[in-house]
Length: 169
Image (cartoon, rainbow, N blue to C red; front, top):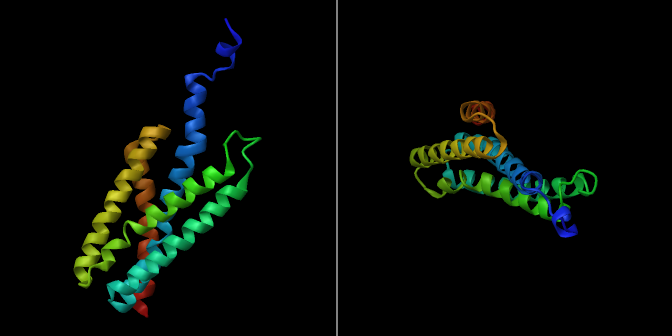
């Protein structure tokens, strides 16, 4: 056996590195973006009944959360001790995932009609929840239904509280 064969990482090590350095930061970002933007969007849309205001609240939150999560992940560890890889790459992946997770259900609020914007946004949220559950099932071996229920529960709590806040204003 040559030294090159011994130095080459196994398929298990490659998969583990992919999970630690790419999939996990992306998943963290997508979940955070999908959940953290719900509160300002629903509070604003229920308070104002103006979808465009909800759009700007969601867009600002998605951008701010994306930058915040990028820095948080990038500064959380150097990757040397944990094997999680480059902090810059992880930060970029997490920040982009956070922005993407937040902006997908923000875009429907460009629809000027209040009820139509809400329906399309809710459909986008359902799509996001299904996608997140699938990613957790596919890459992390978590049961699909369990993942869906866990993520949906978090989203329902956030949306309900923020909608309630918006309704009382």
